[in-house]
Image (cartoon, rainbow over all chains, first blue to last red; front, side):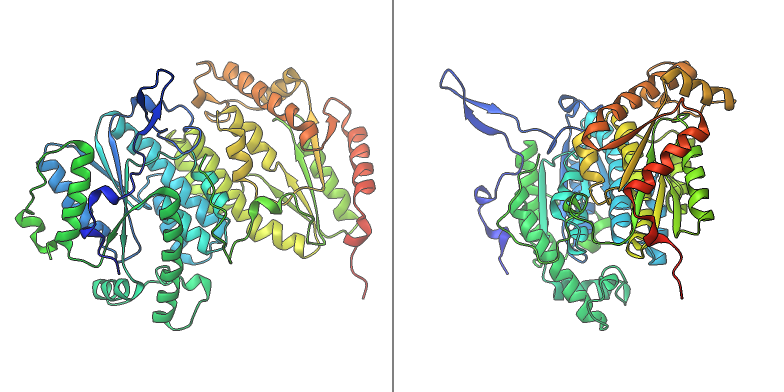
Length: 275
Length: 244
């Protein structure tokens, strides 16, 4: 496993950073990249979005939620207002997806489209308003998890990218990469069992839960490797300590936002996360 | 647009994009009616269905926006007016996907004649009128099987709008396209919205091989034409009851 947190920051591919271009008079000018992958969402003016969108991706048990709690506290301590988003949190269909998952009767295309409804409801009604107000949005998973999950179930990647091309392009996308075996240990510790969907049991991979989990998470990981190349993720070693992952995240976010200090010590309320 | 990376192969990929255009792999057939509200399409499809049923053919009728799956979400979204053009479109696509995967596809594979009151062209026309990109919509529904016949019932805007307004005490918010902010007057908004939808339908006549039906023609005469076209384009014998 690569120790990505020891890599010099300069070698990390810049995702969504301004591209340098030569203009007619020979001087290098900076062309801001589109904030959308394709045509923007109907009715959205990209120039109004002054906030910053930071995405943390990774499979189950990669430590995303922990890092988001810590980053929220750090950013707030620096005086930045933070809004968070995650899967199945929309008012519109969040509960409906929970119900569908509980039933196990839903088919893959329907589930993929319900998740995209959930995503765009949050994006349009919570995230875009937050970005218009200059907030920092921390996303616990984004379109990439949705694409990966649907792709391993046999839905064409180009189809999925077509649906999400109207989504907002993140300013920074971090990928907390962990081996499936490590994810298994962490998830099992957390809930003393492994859930139906986390182990991809709808895909009939194996009757053994451990095998099913490992095979499913390995498939997801392969999709992430592909997505990482396509979208320029900043890959971090999710197996290293919480504090060292957090340090790299802070450094990279600080340099994006122009914050000078990356000093941080979690408050008493969050100190239990600091391992 | 996201740039594609063709050098990474996928083993499990099913291509919904190709499905719509490739040669069909099932013994069933799909007949679709499209048109704006008040164009007479539902009446005609009902009569076609009765004819086929009475003759004993294996048929199944399906309509747009009918599965219980998204009913609560649609209701919630409409009541509180939370739907944007994108979420409105996606919610209907999810609903259609459920019907497609659990009804339409199994029935087509099982050799049924499937009759659909509205199909993906409704989404193209209506969501397009709301501002969704046509390109995005085409991709979104690319998993849908292509119809064998698409009847497009066309009635002049005034005729269609008057049929609807006369039969309904109050037009609903989204139905009237009030979310677009075209006009504060509901009937006025409805009229302009329907006009946009009508224009979008008209543009698909050639590209999507619609069979144009004049919605002002008398009901029984129109039905006669419809039955004749179905009989010509589909070999109905294959849907006849199986003899023991």
